[in-house]
Image (cartoon, rainbow, N blue to C red; front, top):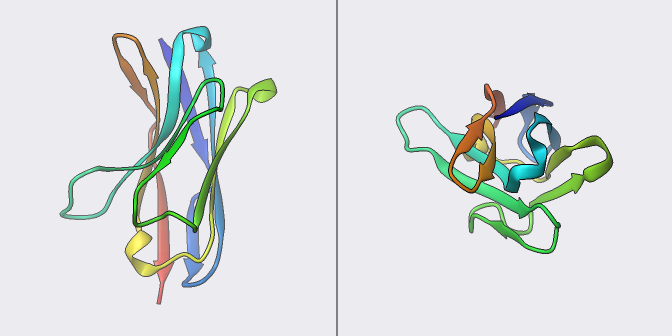
Length: 116
């Protein structure tokens, strides 16, 4: 099992920036990819960004391309999500996840609120 601890959420004005961090521990050798989902009130959870364990492949939701950047610090077993040019529609709870061969582990979620 993998334990995930998120940090970095908060309240920011539109146009501002935040950086989310997700620290992994436990069976990290079994992780194939990590990333972030988000869920806004009344909406389905959606994939925001992912990065493979070797860092060679990344993918982003169309709504965040050019504004968000996902990266990893393997020395710290951490995945980062740099969010720039934030919009009110980015307001959601952001969940870090770790994809393994047969299962997915989730963080507890961190709130991001963007005021207009």
